[in-house]
Image (cartoon, rainbow, N blue to C red; front, side, top):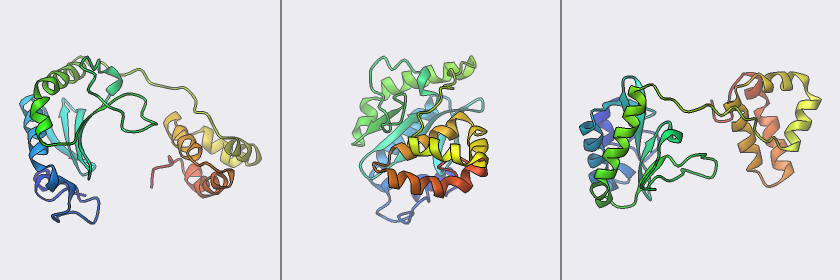
Length: 206
């Protein structure tokens, strides 16, 4: 992954084999991405690189991050549960995303069309950071598939490790396992996940 901000706008994020090629998604959306960058900087945000992408920060707190894909490019808000979304322009990244958190663009021209709204939303997010307003933590327990419940009952070491995980890590396993349609697939995944759980990691951690 890249570590220098200019590399993103000239080569891409460095996370796949299309990096620094004409096929990189950043090439298709470069005009829109450049406008997103300009708007974020005009809002007074500090520009950094995180996870191979341009991330914009205020007083050490992440505000938004930019991403480019084959079919669209996005401006995603951190702490999206705080956003009022008065213009109803925020979208969910996927079915497991609890709150709408991103502005999604399918043409470069859309960024300038939405610039005024975007600037207002950035201002709102910056105000939350300035006043140290944070989202209420969701500590609700995930719905565990029956196969995992049975595995935990049969394996005390696994159960102790699983319930010692953070709620977020437990949810990552529940989401992954519940996405499998067949019981046999869930059982295979549980066996594969055992070492990760014992190590205290979430489903998506390496």
